[in-house]
Image (cartoon, rainbow, N blue to C red; front, side):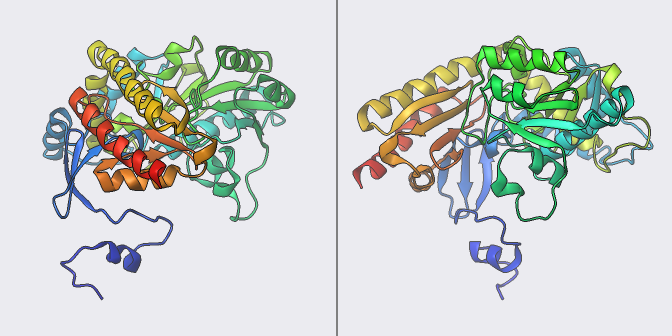
Length: 405
């Protein structure tokens, strides 16, 4: 048994359920786009906690909100409301298509609420025949049994017994595959306005507008899962704003709290009324501590300077990646939008994304992957240009190690 004072990577194997395989590095503090581990090694962070740390680590506005609220009020039951929750909800409603907000603790919970609402709406408005949900292969919507079944990756949903019924998977960017599945029985189509886990795939204009039209023709709701794309990640406050398509329900989490757990589902008054008293809930959802931090993150990101900065930094990022690729010929394409960027490996380097991630870590750079063949980047939205430059120099070293093998 380890000494209770020494926290090592070995302790993980001793006391944690083995569903994760974390890195040997144990970070202990962070500031901005940099992190330091137990040995005080420094890392540049291009991973952003998987698109969560939208303002980097320990951003002053978030630290201030957390400390101030932490001395006032942390939690109440939902028999009472609270000021931070109401302020954040009002700001979200004012900034989006939505009229109503439901707070949860995560993206999975926000999607669970959206799917349950869609089913309630269909039952109340159209009758019990209207239960079908269409989502997309390679999609990802969370890890509850409902959301993981809706997500289009069998590896995550198989092996837990009978799945929730009436869920069908179309192909992303293939409008005909949606047309083949949609009918009067469809209550909702659920999609990411840019597929994240599925490989950083942007929707075509024709596809996203076509899906909206098919939903309208079949009296189905369009649900946008903006857990990863929302709160400035793609250069607009929410991705739908750049697509010329408005969903009926939108889910948001990850960056919404800048690192503090919070999620939300937003929708119109007409749809929201179907989650009447007692039909859904969450013990911690909308707690004052999470909402105070969420409000600070939302205010900081929802600023033209920050959002335009995302677009400029995205150009810089892609430019460096293209330079690296000209030299090392490792990527087939650089894709994505804003600061959710994917570098897809070419034929010669298939399956090597994880190796590149490990090599980057050895150089002092944290990156992500999206599947076996895509290196994914989701850095802070306010990462200094100098950190991008330095991080890319480290990334090139990691890439050179792989190409020289």
